[in-house]
Amino acid sequence: MDQIEEFVDERQKAWCIHCGGWIVELETNRDHVPSKSLLRKPYPTNLPVVQVCKACNEGFALDEEYLIGFLGCVLAGSTDPNRQDNPKVERILRENAKLRARMDRARTEYQTLGGETRSFWKPETERVNRVIVKNARGHAFFEYGEPMLTEPEHVWSAPLEGLTSEQRAAFENIGSGGLLPEVGSRMLTRVMTGQDLSGDWVIVQDGIYRYAVAQFGVMLVRSVLFEYLATEVYWSE
Ligand SMILES: [Zn+2]
Image (cartoon, rainbow, N blue to C red; front, side):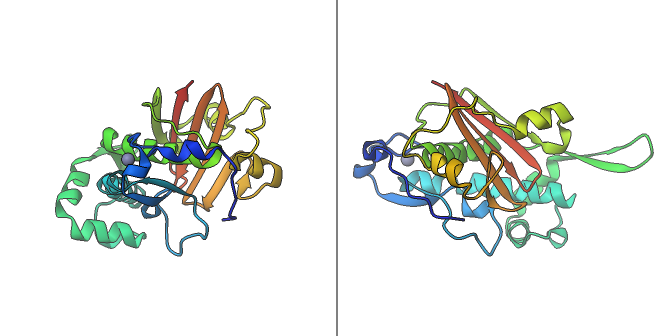
């Protein structure tokens, strides 16, 4: 990815965007958004980074492992490590029998009218949502310099393929209402230069992770993981 400087107010950087802790008093870490664990190697260069407290940085690891494992199983149609094409998912399933057992329980097989066996997978929504909101906070902060310290009003995720064509079109077009992002924000630089943008979307890794952020009365963040899972988070102001 291209590296983009930002010029937002330095005072906005005083708090950890996840827990609201005063960052100068806490041990801090540079945290990638999205988390590297969601991407595939080789990683893109110049991944977006935000400064967060160490406890928050480490506190999301298990939920991220869950999400990457879950998505891997859904995409492979199996919890078998040998059937994964993502080496991270293979390792998670091999090394963590408990997690694999949870994935097995998340799966329900059913017969279609045509007699085919299909699977229905039910994620642990709370865990998935924690990762989605974590990344949404990071995207909002990185692109607009806005720390979204309150709980979002809305958190949603669903398989892209489950959307109707109207829903899909609405999802893909984040629609900033013709407003330009604030002067000094990275998002304005992107809009002016087209850096890493495809339509409204910032492409972090093609086919693996993309996101879109818009601020127009609400802060709206969408992402797509593995071109499979569509997510949306918003905060009204
Ligand atoms: Zn924190």
